[in-house]
Length: 614
Image (tube, rainbow, N blue to C red; front, top):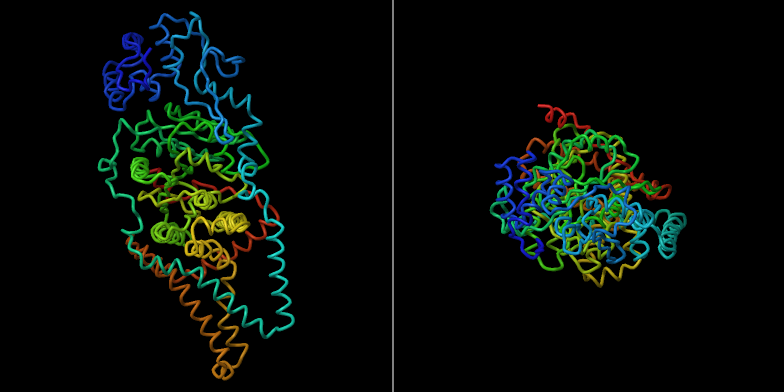
C-alpha cells in the first residue's frame, strides 16, 4: 500500500470510505467535498485530513476504514494494553530523550504485514499513555534532572560553586573591613563602585536610543492574515504549541478560543495542554470543552519540584512538530504569528534557534501598576531586545511566545527545571552552544499583574531567576567570552549583572549625592577636587541612568501613541524602588527556597473580564 509520505497528493487511500461515512450520516457530502479540497491543498489524503482535523472521531474513522478493508477491529484503551506487538511503535533515543515516533495509524495499521483478520488496536494517544505509564519514573527524572545530568556546569540545581562562594565572601569581607578601618574612605569607593555599576547597566539602554527600529527588527512586516508571507500552505510543517497550566480553570475556554484563531491549518497543529495531576478543576474544565483533535492533554505526574519548565520538559518527548512555541493561559497571540515564525525560520540561517515575539500589555490602563507594566514591556520588546539582537548579545527570552526549532531545543537539553526564569537561561545557553535568537515582528497580548502583593511575588521570582542565571553562567565565564567575543561579553555583563545589581543598589545611588553633600560642608565640597568629582560623578550617574530609561520609555510610548502615559513616567522612581525591594526579597528567597515557583494568578483583570463579558 502506498503511504501518504510517498505520495502526499493521494486523494484516497480507501476509496469506499466516502460512501461509508455518508451512509452512516457521520459527515455530509458538502463537508466531505470541502475536506477533500482542503486535504489536497495541504498535501494530505482525505483520510489523514479527517483524522487530523477531528471532524470525524478517531475510533469511528478507524472503524469505517476497517470495514472498507474487511477487517474486524476491537478497540481497547491504553489501560488494557499489555503487549502492543500488533501495531508498529518505534522508540528511539536522541540525546537522552525517549521519543515516540509520530504515530501514523492510517499508514501502519492497514499495512501488508497485518496477517491477522481480527486485530486489536489503540489510538496514538492510548500508546502515549501506555508509554508514560511504563516509563513514568524515567520521564519524571528526565524532566527534572536531564540538564543537570548532561551538563552539570550549566544547571541551576547545584547553586553556587565553592569558588564563587569564596569570591563573594571575600569581597564582602573586604568591603566590611575597609569600611571599619577607613570609614571616611568608604564614601569614595562606594560612590565609585555604584557609579560604575549603574553606568555599565545603562550602556545598552543608551545605545538602544540611537538604533532605528527598522534596523533592529529584521522580521518582514506582513498583513495580519499572513497572505503576504513567503509560505506555501501545503508545505507548512507541523507546529507544536505547549501551554503549561495550573489552576487556570477560569481561562481555559478563552485560551483554547484564542489558539483556534491562529491562522494555521488545524491539521498541522499539535497543541498540548499541560496539566499538573493534582489540578482536577482545570482538567475537568478542559474536558467539558469537547476540543478538536489538534488539542492533546498531557497530565504531568507530581514531584516536589513543581515548576513550569519541568512540565514543558515532561511534554517535550511527545512533541510532533518541527517547531514549538510556548503560550501562557492568558495569552492572545496575533493570528499570523505561527506563519511569521515559519517564514522567519525559513529565511534564517541554520544557527537561528529561537524567535521571541513581542509581548504587549492589554489591560494597560487598569491602574498605576498596569501602566508601568505596559511601559516596561513596550520598552523591553520594542527597544531593548532589538538592540541586544543587533549587538549580538544573548537575548534573555520572555517566558511566553518564544518559538524554537525542536531538534535544537532537544539537543541543548531543553529547559532547566530548577531555574525559575528558565527563559533567560535558555537564551544564553543557546548562545553558548553556538546558536542565536532573534526578535519576531509579531505581538502577543498579555494581562498585567497589576495587584501589589502578586506583583511582588512575580517580580521576586523573576529577579531570583536572574540571580540563578548569573550564578550558572559565571561559573566558567571564559566559555561565554570565547563564544561571543570581548565586546559582546561586556554587553552581556552589562545586561545581566548590571540589571540585577542596579536594582539592588538603586536606593543607594539615589541618595549618594546627598550623602556626600551633607556629610561634608558646602565649602569643603566646593574646595575639594576629590569631593566635588565624586559628587558630580554620582549626580551624573543618576542623570544618565534615569535619562536613558526615561528616554527609552518615551520612545516606546511615542510608537504606541500612548501620550496619556507620559505623566506616569514622572512616578517611575517610585516604581523602581518597588523593583529594588523585590530584588532584595529575591536574594532572601534564593537563600531560603531557591527553586520555589510563585504561581502568577491570571484572569483577575476586571477590565479584561468586563471586555470578555460584552
